[in-house]
Image 1 (cartoon, helix red, strand yellow):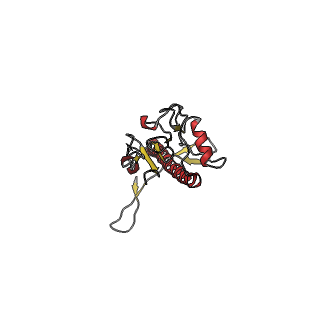
Image 2 (cartoon, helix red, strand yellow; image 1 turned 135 degrees about the vertical axis):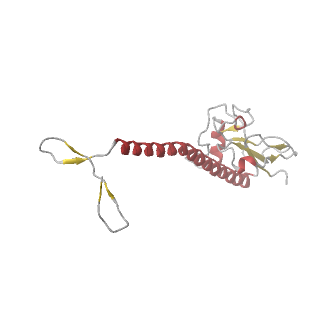
Image 3 (cartoon, one colour; image 1 turned 120 degrees about the horizontal axis):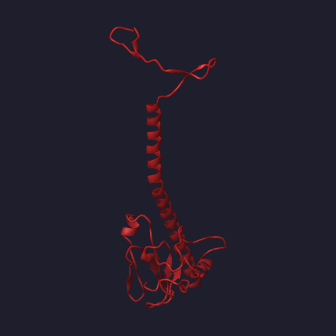
Length: 199
């Protein structure tokens, strides 16, 4: 390195880049040092790892937002159904948790979905775990119940799960009270509903 003369008090260093000849008549090429290449690769690796860690969490959050939106649609459709018919759709036919329920992971949900929506609208969990699933066992399905407890089809409950276990809605799930006063709140889920027969 040699110093370049400049104004007094300031002496910048001039760095000579090494040049490489490719052949006898070729132009001189400048290149990157191994250290420079390793630094760039390390930075790219760091950025890639940040993206890989963040991406799954973003996917979970997006599915939770979709779940909440679908549940909101189901609740509105149930209220419209009640206003038209004077009762909620009858639940039943599920494999899990028992045959009194409707479960979005099996054919029992098709009947409920058909009664609540127009053709082509899906009211299912974004993951919709396999048949035989139950939200209270940590699966991602929607469970619907509207039978008995003092007023068949005059009340309902929806039970579902979120992937973000620290979501305030999951931590503060209100539960639902049936017509006979029995209270339902399944651990680790959001349990919500309406009791028209209680009023």
